[in-house]
Each structure stands twice: as structure tokens, then as C-alpha cells.
Length: 230
Length: 326
Image (tube, rainbow over all chains, first blue to last red; front, side):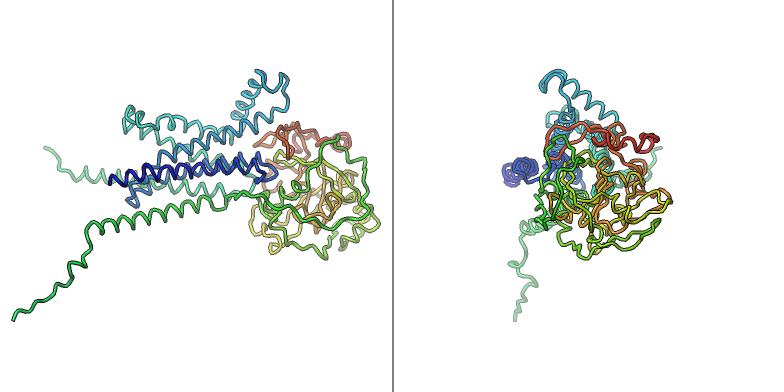
């Protein structure tokens, strides 16, 4: 058993860690060597977004997978998957800020590197988040991941206590829903991909709803079956 | 006599408990891996596998293309490359991804193509591409092309003024609109097997818009026959309107009295109106139209009213509110 733990920790985990970096490495390579489309900036923005959703979905798969298969080791990868979701979410947001907002300023009255640029950039991001519902909801999905990333360390779990930590981390359900809506609202006519993600998230969250329902029924039966004290 | 009956199962045959448990674990692990693999498969299914699509092979050279049209006024902006123009396309009949038309239209055959002219006109009938080009001078027109998705290109089209063909069809006084449709043939256009839009694709112009000398029927790019992914063999180009107005692979031109409903207008009336004039002051409900990214550039450009063709076309819209008639 000790061997197994060690293999997971020192062999499997590093491999999974590197594999998860793959999409980012590939995108950078492809963008720099002209392997993307004629609009590589838009490809990078889209792909980092889709990978965020994929990692959110993978993170949400850990618990059901463990319960259904009894494969306990899977939980050892949940935090890494969650942090990768945050990582790709931040990459997605950064590409949006640089490629869409910064490049879209069009005019740089004070020069490109200047306070005026910073101010108009912040104004442009803020305005976009405020005015465009699909940006608002995407930004919400990202912001909700921040406290989860911060409290992902063992120390923070201890400080918060398991119960409160669990409650807080249910925010990821909201992130998943907001992420899917963000994708859905952005597409012009072909909604097949957002639909696929919506279905996946619905199954993963539906599983949890069903469990909560079953649990409460079980508890109710236990309580009614207990002898009544005089 | 003592008969020793052998035990039903020899002890050597009994699986060691450790092994037994391992096997169980193995099955569970295998199951979990299979489950995870299916999950990953579903997650990546239909996702864009990014790879550089091959640009269109160079086609037939068009003869006697007249260059230097006064309408080719793009203020010295750099033209987009053949590769960009033939690998980044919105042509839903061949898939909704930008790189799909280049691939899925590769074997599209346009031999024996004809355009059916119908409706309010004195000379309806079937016109072959040769009929349409007969007696016409093919002109090069270098135009800006502004997509409704806020990107743009500069493209050297080759074509004839749409107005020339219209005159030959002798429209009646009742002909207020010209409605153009793309081929409907899901066998040859695989994108039509999905109902993302109502097929066939339809876009219409008001008669005075259609007669405007800027509006052309294009049959080529860079002096060569139009590649399939760009709307072969004949397509509409109206440079002051968003790109989706340019109906591709046209098989029908119909003169109508009433204002037709266009494909995108039908799909999302709140987002796409009848006119679809490029207008930086009227945003798409979901994104800004104030600026655009020229394909190949990093910094965006300000979008120009009527895509920079205001001097020529603004007078067509003196009497209508462009905020309402988007």
C-alpha cells in the first residue's frame, strides 16, 4: 500500500501534471509556428476557454467516479484538476484582456505603455463585463474559482474545517453552470458544442442532486424507525 | 480399504487471497479507466482539432481581367493572402468551423452550373455562367470584407456588376427586391445535413442597392476562378454590408415585390436585420461592432461606417433610421 501511494505521488502525479500542461504547450507552439488558423488570436482565446470547461468537468467527475467504481485514488487528482481548471480559466481571461481588450483599444493617446492605456484598458474590461451578459457570466465563473484556488491547500482545509471547506467548494457547481451558459451565449447558430457541455454538466450535477435526495430519505427512514423515547 | 477422495478443488487451484483482491482491484481500476476514457472521448468529441488547413489549389486563370477599377479604393491597405482567404471561411453549407469549408468543399463540382432567374422580370430563365459573363468585362475589385463577427479582410475579387445582369433580365416595375439563393443539395453540401440555418441560404437586396455599381457578382479571386470555399462558381459581394450578405454558390435570382426574409434574419431577428449595413454605431446585441480585427494583424482597427464606402452608398439610406433598420 505504501508502494502504491508512493508510485501515485512520485510517478503518476507528475505524469498527469505534465499531460495537463499539454494543451497550453501545444497552443503556444502552434500559435508561434503558424499551425493555427488565419485568425490565431481568436483560436487561442477559444481553445483556452474550452479547456477550462473540460477541466471543470473532469474535476466534477472525480467524486461520482470514486463512488461508482470504488476507485479511491481518483480523489488524489481532484485538486490538481481543479487547479488546472483555474489555470486555463486565467489563461483564457488573460488572452481576452490582451488580445481582445488591449488590442481593441485602437487608439493610444499617451503611447502604448502609459497610465492612459492602463486606465482605458480597465475601463474597457469593466465596461465589457457590465454591458455584455456573456462576458458577465464568464467573468462570474472565473471569479468564483478564485476562493477555491486560494483554499486548495492542506493548511487551508485544516483551518476552515472539512465541513465548511466542502460547503465553500460547492461553488464549483455554479462555475460549471456559468461556464456552460457563457459558451452557449457566445455561439452564433451551431450550438452543438455548448449543448454537449451542458449535457455533461447536467449529468454530473444531477448525480449529486439524486444522491442528496437519497441521503435525506435514508436519514428520514432511520429517524422514523428509531424507537420513541418515553 | 481406504479410498481417498481428492478434494473437489485442489489447494493449488484456490486463488490466493492477495491475488484475488488484486484482481478485484484490477477490474475496478480497468472499469474506472474505461469510464474516464469514455468521459474524455465525449469531452473532446466535436472539438476543433486545430491544424493548419491546406489552402485552395490554384485554379483556372481568368482571362482579360480589367484592373484598376476606381471602386478598388482601400486606401493602400494590404491585401490578405490567398492562403488566408481560402482557409478562413464562413460557409455553413460546408460546416460551421472556419477551417471546415476548405476541407469539406474540396470535391465540390460546379460543372454545368446555371442560375435560374425568376419572378418579376421580362426575361426569366436559366443562365449558364457563360451566359452571365457573355459580353461582360470581368473587373478586379479590391474590397474590404467586414464579417459580422468583427474580423475583416481585404480581398481582390474578380467579377461583374450585379446591375449589368439585372438589366439584362429586364425586371418589371413591380420588382422592388432581388432575392438570391445558394444551391440546396445536402449530398454535395454536407453542412446542410444539420439544421443550423434554414436551407437554402437566402439573402436579398433592395433594387437600388442591387443596382449600385459597388455590388458585384464575383467569379474569381486574385485573377483565378473562385475557389469552392469562397462560393464557387458565382457569388454576391456587397462591400458596405456584413459578409453574410454575400450569398455564395448562387443558383437562383428572384425579383420580388415584397421584402423577402433573409436566412440570418429568420434565425435571429433581434441580431440580424434585413439591411446588415456595416455600422460601428449599432452593436450586435452580444458584441461591439465599433472595431474589427483585420486578419493577420494584432491591433484592431476602428470599423468605418458602411465599411468605408459611405461616400458611395450613404445616399441610399437617407430616408431610413439605420438604428431600427440594422
